[in-house]
Amino acid sequence: MQDWLEPLAGVIVLAITLLDVFFTVLYARAGTGLLAPRLARGVWSVFRGLSGGRHPGILTYCGPVQLVALVLMWGVLLALGAGLIIHPALGTGVKSSSGATDTDFVTALFVGGSSMSIVGASDYGPTTAAYKLLFLFNSLVGMAVTSLTITYVMQLYSALRSRNTLGLMMQTQSGETGDAAELLARWGPRGRFDGGYNNLSTLASEVAAIKETHHFYPLLFYFRFEDAFYAMSRVLLIALDAAALVRTALDPRELGWLQESAALTELERTSALLLRTLNENFPVHPEAADSAQSRERWRQRYERALERLRKAGIPTRADPEAGAREYVTLRASWEPGIEALAPALGFRVDEVDRAGFSGRPRATGG
Image (cartoon, rainbow, N blue to C red):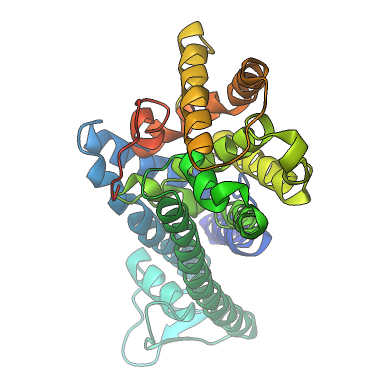
């Protein structure tokens, strides 16, 4: 019975592994995959436990370790699947070219790994047509998975660089405050948003691109950096807050064209979509319930933003009370998602939303 049970188990292991590679690298959708998402959550749980909530710097190693663990898992499973298929054939369909043929399972793993071009060449080779085809198939699979994995890693790090560039851009354009009001004040000095519209359009496009990179490369979520301005929770908060302030704080008589622009709509919707994607597909904290205290904090944040915009010479709406109500309503639609996302990567909400938790945001490098 073992003669056919082991090969059957090997075929199942190979099929599951190749399906996981397919869903992770080729199909590339957040929330798909058979093994990779579970491995990612498991590794993340280990690092969260090691950090203990007091040493968030440990989480910075999680992303690279996840990549190593993923590659090792695929390599081991491919070797295991091939070894299970080859084991019953040792000494018959597969023989050593020098000396006696060992028939233990470790030898089968070694031969299986060698046939996948992962471990290297061995003295063992197929002697029947069926196993010659199997070795050929294993070699093609091994080379294909290796090439796909290398490409995947290169593209993931390229996407990570683009994400970090966006975070740094928003940090510097806001005067290193992380304040969306400061960002708008620098985009439209003296009320002139001619050049600021280009910044808005660029930001909307970059957020849309980052949304797709997180959709295609889910492991990207687990890469954390020490500086809070690289965190997606910080980037999304600034983007959504800037959009909300454009909607509710600017004078529609003079800047209505900006409020009606496609770039603003794109920024709002892509940011909200990215936030929803992250909250639905990754291990985040439960969303905080809306509270009177939060609404009062958002109202005070709106008043400080109005003050900064007026100081920059930007026309603001004539009815600030109505604007504050609209701003609070908009903020209530996405703030809970930010508060759920930030702690998942070891950041306090006040580190991400410094403008919303202090009277005057301080300039800082992180």
